Each structure stands twice: as structure tokens, then as C-alpha cells.
Amino acid sequence: MATADPIPEITTPSARADNGLLVLLAAMTPEQLERVLSNLTACFPAEDLLIASPDAVSDSLPADSHPSFRIVAAPAASASWTLTAADFVNAYQLASKNKARAILMLSPESGSLASSAIRALANAVLTAPTDLAVPCYDLPPHAGLVNSAILFPLTRALFASRVRFPLAVDLALSLRMAERLAGAAHRFTALDQGEALLWPINEAKVAGFDVDQFEVGPLVQHQPAGPDLNTILPLVTGSLFSDIDTKAAFWQRFRQFEPARELLPISQAPSIDTAPDIAPMLQAFRLAYSNLHEIWSLVLPPNSLLGLKRLFATDAADFRMPESLWARIVFDFLLAHRLRTINRGHLLGALIPLYLAWVASHINITTSGTTPECHIEAVAAAFEADKTYLVSRWRWPDRFNP
Image (cartoon, rainbow, N blue to C red; front, side, top):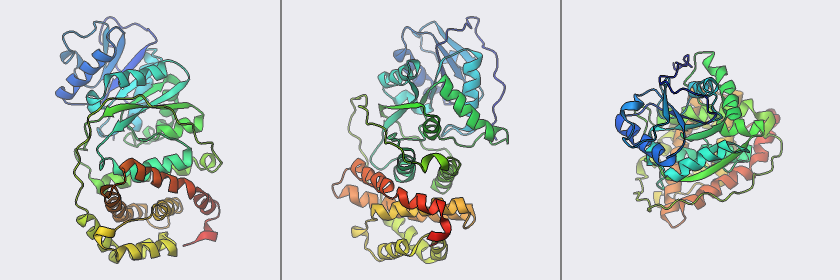
């Protein structure tokens, strides 16, 4: 398990407190590191930066890099595909030790992002009032669908947030935001659970901190080295469900939806993305309908089960899952997770074929002429519209048994 290790001393003689920006890099390959450092050189050609990395940064600095870049060794969390509790503890400790007033956390793929957008993320937290600056990635139409189907609509409906990627791998934090996240992370690292996920948007909303997001252009798609959908979906969904549970007193109250903000425009080439074959997804859903129906009946109300029965009998070409049905399914799985209706591992495993059915439907809808973002917006709107159902069942679960 990754834990927050003691922070080593700065390794260069020019270690001085300038109250500037700490750039914390994830562990990455030498090629990725070279691209990221070149991007930082372009973003901050005349500023002092403190760069913290578990890798040998000095060997990868471009020849024309600014001489005031200062290097410090940083411990690496074992999970490389997302930020973890240990990462946030380490970030705050490093920032406090070196008296930085803002932190920029960059992923291995951040070298592919527009340099002007990275600069905008950093500037947002270096100048008040923004405490958390997050990217809005340009992904291919059929990428990041766990985020589009579950993470984004749930976060938007319950925390009144427009942030499109609530589990982004690149972030800019004010010092007080970093302190808040480190405090939340300590609950996990104290139990030797440094690989646990945190939800920065939710933390910022509960704390009343200001959040902003920026278009950052295309992101080289980040594929986890080991985990697949059967691991990723239960992990991130279960983590979000647990976080929602701990913050129930906050999201059950009415929240004013945050105003839309104009995003920083980034010129980009159109994405080329071939629609996946939905036949294996439908096969998985139909097999699960036969094998998991008893489990689903413990979680879902009769109307949802009837909707799934209709989908089971629908031909592939006409397969469409109503947005309202998907919202109700996710809400009922969230409630079952809270109530421990069945073993949580079995519960989240039973959600996977339903998610695949949603993906198949999404692909059919978007290849029929609806843009992906329009459909995802409709899904998010369905979650918002059904929030009263979730609140009612959360408060009085015995009155709304499936």
C-alpha cells in the first residue's frame, strides 16, 4: 500500500522560499518526463518553479530550460493511473515544507496538453479566489465513459458542479485546498490505505471553496497498465458512493447550480474514433439478465426491472436505454451500497453489465446523429431531475423498498 513518506530535503543548493508554485509530477517514463518538462519550460519561461518528482528530473531537463527550476525528490504512490490519498498528503507536506502557495499536480500524459492551458490552471490558484482548478479534457467520443455515465452526472446532480471530469489526473490547488485534501486523505493513510481515491470537487464544494475548470485540449488517452473495467468500475464507483455517503448532510440540502463559466478555447484537430462493436456488450447484458436477475431484484424497483426486461427483448439496432432508467439504476445501486443490501463487491460487480448496456445505448444514440456531449448532457439532466427520489429513499429507505 502507498503511504505518505517523509519528505526528503531539497537536493539543490538554491533552495529558497519564494512562496511560488510547486509542480508535483507523477512517476513516468523518461520519454513522458522529457515531454512534461519541455511543456513546463514553455509554460513558465521566466518563473522560478519547484519541481518535485520521484524520477531523475535533472537528467531530462531541456538544454534551454530556465536555470531557476529547482528540483526536489518526491515519493511516488504505487497507483499510476490516478491520484491517490498518499499523493495529496505528499503534495501538502512538500508545499508546506517549501513554503509554496500553490500546487500543480501533473500526470504522465500532461505533456500532451496545451501549454497555455497548463499555465491557466496554475495562474487560477496563484491568484484568488480559485482554490481548485481542473482540466476539461478533449477525449475521443467513446473514451472516458465511466466518467460520462456515472462520475460526472452523480457529482453534478448531488454537488451542483459543472466540472466535466471530477476525477481528473491533472489539478492545480491553492494551499488551503491542498490542506483540506491532505486532511481528508489522512483518514486513509492512517489506516495504511494510501491508494484510496479522493474526490477533490466534492471536498471543495463542502468547504465552500471556489472551483474553476479550463479547456486543456486533447489528452493522450491514459490506459491503466493492469486494471481493466472489472476492476476500475467497482473501484471508482465504490469510492464515489462511499464519499457521497459521508457527505449526505451536505448534498441533501438544495444547492444553487454554479453559474456556467466561459472555458478557455483551445484549437484542436477533430478526434478520430471508431465506434466499438456493441454486440459483446449486449451479450454480456443479456447473459447477466438471466444470471443476475435475482440480485438486481434486491436492488431495483419493479419499474426498473420492467425497463430492463424491455431492453432484453430489444434488437441491437434499436437498443436505447432511457436516461431516466439509467439515473434510477445508479441511484438505487448507490442506496443499496449505503444499506449494504448485498455484499458490496457483488453489488458493484452486478452493475458492470448494466453499465455495458448503457454504453451500447450511448454508442447507438451517438452514431445515429446525436453528439456525444448532447447525450451526456441529457443523462446528467436526468440525474438532476431524479434527485428528489434519491433524497426520499435515503431518508426513509423502508418506505421505498423495491
